[in-house]
Image (cartoon, rainbow, N blue to C red; front, top):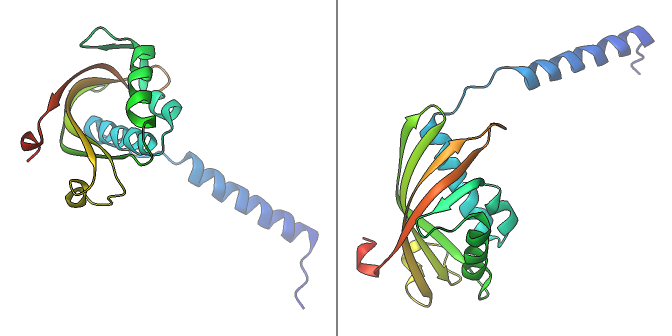
Length: 164
């Protein structure tokens, strides 16, 4: 049987604490603007699929303006109507392009497909679904709290043949 003295237990505890602090405080590589915005779009898309409008809206700035003149609250209503209708929502995006404008700003363009289906793959989506396709362009900015949020967006509806 192994017995440890009190000083060894304290020393081991301190060593684990120091190791944990080193890991937690070790400088992390800063994401590029392109990677940060791409990740944010993926997070927001997943939240929309989970019908978590509040989480989607965390990625939208209070300064948000849409091409139609909508603010953040009008966008919330439009997204809720689109995402909360129906039983299943699948959201796919294609042709995502992100361009760095500055270290705290980037522009994006993507095609978003909203489908009501149980499809797990894009190729299955057209078989038995209601499909809505949008081209979205916009701007993300890194705000004071360090979070990337969309500040401007424009969209237009696409036909299915515009997808491919």
